[in-house]
Length: 142
Image (cartoon, rainbow, N blue to C red; front, top):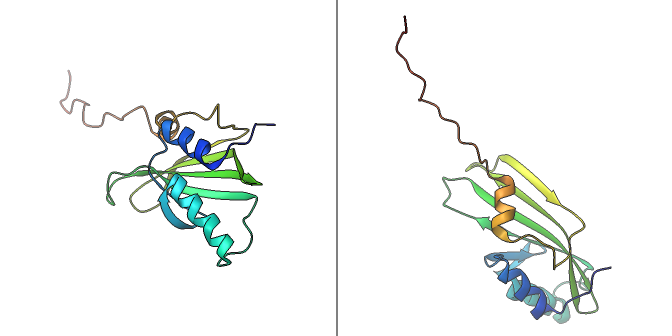
């Protein structure tokens, strides 16, 4: 079993690996990784939410170039137990400007130590091969 990390260590490690954008914890509490989780846990302590769940869902964009361009979304399932965190699995999806799925990849049996950096995860769903349309000669050959 993976060693559990406190919130500061967990957020710092993922931020250093390139997961430095804005996230939502449990579908709300937008903010940087640490802030989003902290806001969720604080809300639970104040009674606005129920007790903190053991499995937290963090969602956010790893790549965003505007509403009219494809984007890469990331969902992380994080185990939370007695104030400690560990990363369980991650799903990365590339979607077009209309929200239609172009490519999806799932990483399982992760730990905070072996999770790939954000650039590597984005590469899993980006198409490396560009189609060269228009390079075909339209002349007739004899």
